[in-house]
Length: 329
Image (cartoon, rainbow, N blue to C red; front, side, top):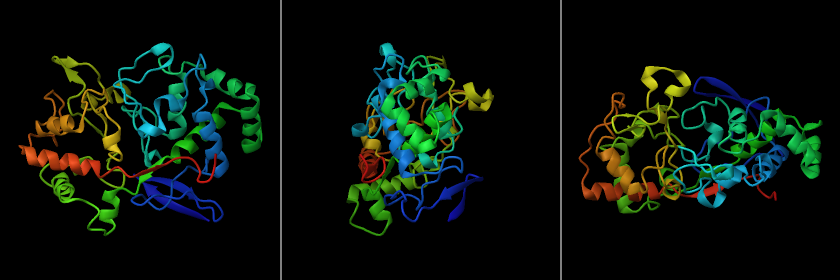
């Protein structure tokens, strides 16, 4: 059976398999979207997981996708800048990849339109995993067990597009939900503490966090200039502008989802804010002034009690993180 669902005006086919469907935690949409060309199945997810944690996709065989997206850290790495092969440090931090099945654009600047495109870019980035695109499939074919698995799933020798399909399928299986916040929204009035309830009220009201952080994943999937790319009177990182070359996008970065946010420090695209207290202070001050500051940002005049309540509420967004196909390993 097929359902047609619309996400941001884009028709996405979702395969519903009576025998095998990916369980979705409380708080998310009922079904995990996937494109017609890459339906979500147990076999593709399991294969993608093997590739995700296989260091053979890096130039020197030392780094896997899971080296930066670490499950025990809610699929981030705790660093201000992602570290690639040969200890190269990137200017941007490893972005969270929770619930990316519902994403509309990927990376901090949105340069990848689909997950199938996104998963290959770190592999071929010279400062990350440093393989050439034409080397990807031969690497996989040369690893006997993986080569056999690719043939079993796709019915042919490994192709680069198949590697992308498998990796994207695994990333779609990384789901976060069933948090105290989700249980509260579902009707459990005791799921949040009194300070967390006060923080939720501020989040939706005076602090206006919902202007950008909304929906099941607490992100508008859009790009905003908060000032983090502007330092010492100039642009240190032009953000979305580097993709669109539109002056309106100068210094704009993708709104990250807030699920598991208490576990994924540091914050902002460059890891420049170390704690949630610093993040709340940053927004209380109205961000960092610059020529393109988002009009939604303004000084909030939060009290110390307000700030503590907001941080408490953000902690309630941590729940359970599921990855891979249940029962597989």
